[in-house]
Length: 401
Image (cartoon, rainbow, N blue to C red; front, side, top):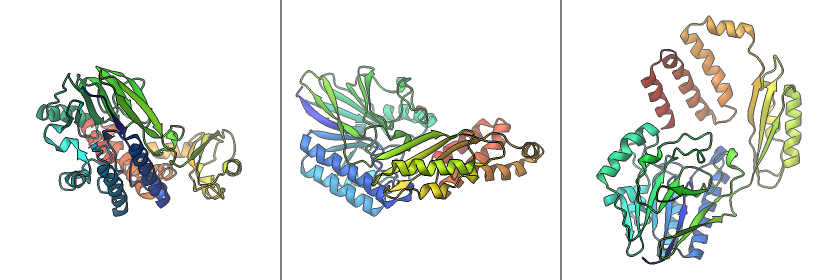
């Protein structure tokens, strides 16, 4: 086989207006432009994007226009882009479909699962096979074997074989605590030299089956708890013996996040507000996203609602945004509230629970998202108490779709 090189990126999340800000949507576009700039400098034979190219299946016109411009630059340079869908940009249903289909039809990308055999070949170099994303573990375990049975992977021992997918594998040293593994390792076929993965937002390289398992991580910050992760992609050189050397290429354009985590156990709400404001002022810097994470246990009778979030948010002068995350615990629920809950009928319990959930989720999500999650949480109460597992599963699946 001939030596060659390729770029492996994932989780670009184009079109994500994080915190409702147009500036953040532009940040994700900027990171993609830098990725393309660096790819053009490296001159690989092709690029792989292992899912979540877009933040949703039908991005806005401005996001789509910028993506088309960048894909056109790669096409003009003769660099094919091989793509699989992710949990965000997979088709929500047959009717809606995904924007990846028309981009594939226009020749700007090669949407691997859409093509015969779900594969792409470069003569004397490599065989690339890609599978779709099925969103949940249950659907993955049911539908991935069926997909591979219909589109049988046929790695060629004389070539370098690449398996492209977007899911978290059940490996002890891989999954972050907030992410559920979507597939056990035994679902992934043998015979590949490089497993080009997406979905986990932290870069990772490790031995897996007959080759390397590689996650490049995201190109911008999706959640504040990823702020310390370097953002970038892998440039992979493969020699004529089929040995791969992945090199992580750091992106410089991603916006800076500053996470300010502090324990406020025992402080009153007014004192917490005062200290958090000072924390933000001390960390203020041009264009950054400041995330004060307030932890600890409040004194008896104190409430999270008494912390002045608006004052904390307005404490910075130079930052793009201050996004407080309130993880304070109230030390105890008053006896009268406990009694009222246990003496309530189920409908009364649902009403009180919804109000409580809304208060909690509104501190971290937009009003629309908070309401959606709160309603799902309330709807779980009755089937959980009655051990209706199928109904619980249905509610959770509807929530993530």
